[in-house]
Amino acid sequence: MTPGRIGSRILDKGVGPLFLIPALVLLVVLLVGPFLYMVGVSFTDLSYALPGRDGNFLGFDNYRRLMREDPVFWESFGTTLTFVFGVVSVEFVLGFALALLLFHHIQRRRVVLSLLLIPMMLAPVAVGLMWKLMLHGEFGMLTHYLRQVGLLGLRTALLGNHDLVLPTVMLVDVWEWTPFVTLVVLAGLLSLPRDPFEAAIMDGARPWQVFRDITVPLMRPIIALVLLLRGIDAFKEFDKVFILTGGGPGTATELLSIYTWRINFRNWDLGYGAVNAFMVYLVVLILCAVFYKAIYWTEGRAPK
Amino acid sequence: MRRTWRIVAIAALVVVLVIVLTPYLWLLMTSFKTRLDALADAPVWWFTPTLEHYPKVFFDKGYLPLVLNSLIVACGSTVLSLIVGVPAAYVFARHDFRGKEDLFFFFLTTRMAPPVSIVVPMFLMFGFVGLIDTRISVILAHSTFNLSLVVWMMRGFFADIPSEIDEAAQMDGHTRAGMFARVLLPLAAPGIVATAVLCFILSWNEFLYALILTAFESRTLTVGIPGLVTPHGTLWGQVAAVAVVATLPIIVFTFLVQRHLVRGLTFGAVKG
View 1 (cartoon, rainbow over the protein chains, first blue to last red):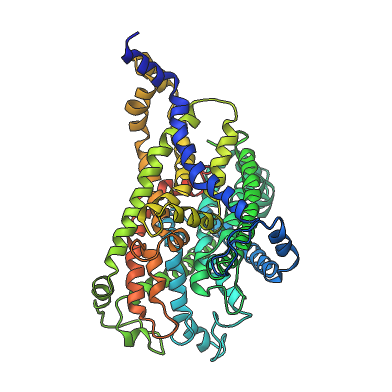
View 2 (view 1 turned 90 degrees about the horizontal axis):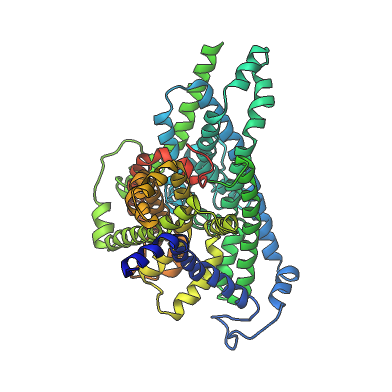
């Protein structure tokens, strides 16, 4: 066999591993490595702010601290859950309704869909700044009109008020991501088979019955997909809220991601921060596993 | 009855579009307003536009290099992810091996990995090798999510190519690698373009990795904008100008790949 032929034989048989290994190496170096390093650091007292804390082994002390001695973490966990369940449910209901409306009553959708894409494709930082400008306590455009119609007190600012700030940032998220639900649900509706609907209408079913007994069951996989994708993303939310409020006033909008950021990069308490980071990761991993199962369920086989 | 519904639907749609578009329109307008108009007590809708903010922030305040940084980072991460990810996606689409779906799940978890968790150890590790405040560090960080996006999206695009084409190519005497390069890649080109655009957008828009991993020299646009916001006396015209430059190209891009966007955003599970 000539060397050239051997080379081509390797290219023929070895394509699988040869093509896969670079991707795996990159991910192991950039994700698995840091992940393991994070777990390692979580057992130490590493800190860049306090003297003498240069990574001494602590055992499970940091985990104990998180579970028993850190009410702020659990408060932040609660805020995150409120945020996630709040935005995902509102986005889902509004987005689904809008998709049904587009599906049934609007024929020429292309332009509308393009415009609906805008909020979710803008950099979240820009979204945050846009709304900070609109909601500014002194010259914000929205603030002005809300005050004019009497919905907002003259001295209240939506982003400065302890009770109003969380619903406000949630509304900004609803603005940004409702169109996403609409797009995915609409794509799902368009891919449904027509026969069951025609049969139901022949049988004299009312629109509401058609929706409840045919649309919803057929759409169940898409619904699961949308809820999980939004849930995971909302759980990781950082950029917008960081820009809009920085977690404040006080800790009113301090989501888990912002709390983790503060422990690590404001307090430089890296050992304890690693525990926080690990908890966030753990929740996302669990949601991921559910998501994967949901996709299997969608297609009845591995996702393509 | 149907007519009434149609009118209601159109009215609702108009309201939705007004809500969706007004904030962005307001940002655009603010970038052309004088300081007086921007800070007026009552919102100003009609005004004489000024172009002063754009040169001021990009030249006088030196924000132009940030645009370049963003461009280099987004292009670099896109190219790296494609080079490494497209062959991997091909293997997932065409080869069978043990543990394939588990490995695929691993790719999904990397796409979903919360940046706030990974950025801390990454910051420490890049610190050891002296990569902090370099564009390379951000390119590598962004490849964590872009690579898996490529694998997920491209697997679908390869799977859409009928396997008869593979057989025909092998009959013609192509090796597997040759077939991949000369036959399948050209067929998958539209998918690669759509994936590339989506990668570019995700990297361009990313904030947290870039915020932590850069200090000054290699700041990207998204990291630079908040620096213009101060507790008092924020120059909103300049903030808006930078935000417009950071977003307008993305909107154009979005329209270009609209057809593939739903697929990309749902990891190939829904074909738009």
